[in-house]
Length: 130
Image 1 (cartoon, rainbow, N blue to C red):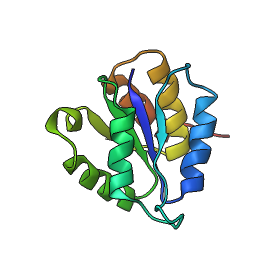
Image 2: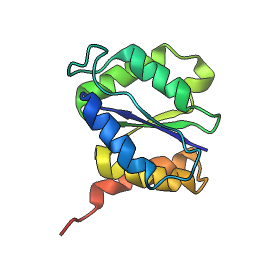
Image 3: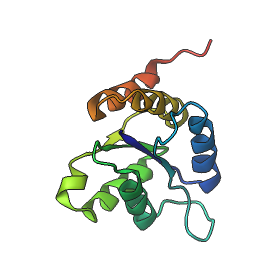
Image 4: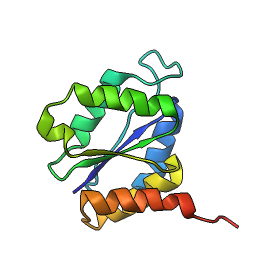
């Protein structure tokens, strides 16, 4: 099953999105929040992101959801800390973090491939709310 990592500058945001996503997930779906700094401050922590990716990786890959551009940079740096085999199965979604995460979790819970989970997350860019 494809794992999901949520990288936000805010620990509360990452944990809140994870809490919502768990309501849509199949039991056992790996959804890891990697938000904020270790001291509770705003920011992204490369080591925390790297550890979250490892925790979410079950062999089928990981989709990383990010909130802002520097979260992408931190994730890219975190990937450099991982071995090549894991790194090759991690994709950063260019998607809205909440809608994309929910979409990705539902798709991953269906047992879809990494590529389909990623495409579903990125498809959330086109959701209309009204």
